[in-house]
Length: 134
Image (cartoon, rainbow, N blue to C red; front, side, top):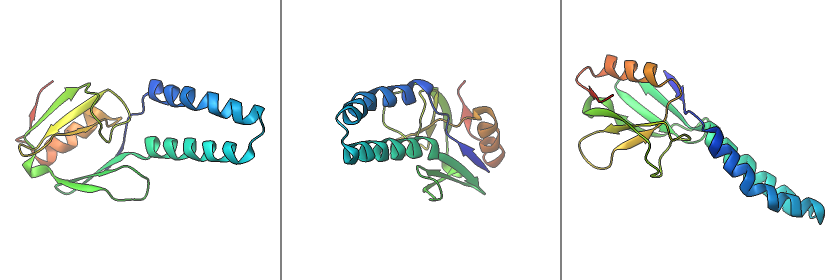
């Protein structure tokens, strides 16, 4: 089952504001090359934000940051707990409404599935031993 990442409107607005002034200057000075580069950068950023998705297959969670690319697998049988978080740490999540998946060893995985309740239900179906801290 495939889940898209929740995308924060504030994050997209921040990116738009960050690129607005350079695009304005480029249009005003009519630097077509600079305009195309900035639009390409903006397009790639949007593709990256809206391309984040999480796929559950059997007992694995795949975290992908670009469309059509299967990401790193995580073994859900080793998942110990799920906790809500608003951490600012870098993660494959395009929103600050996130959940932390703790596998017990190493760094936890922080993600932001749009359908968070359904995502957690599916994980619990795969591994009912997971502790949900809500």
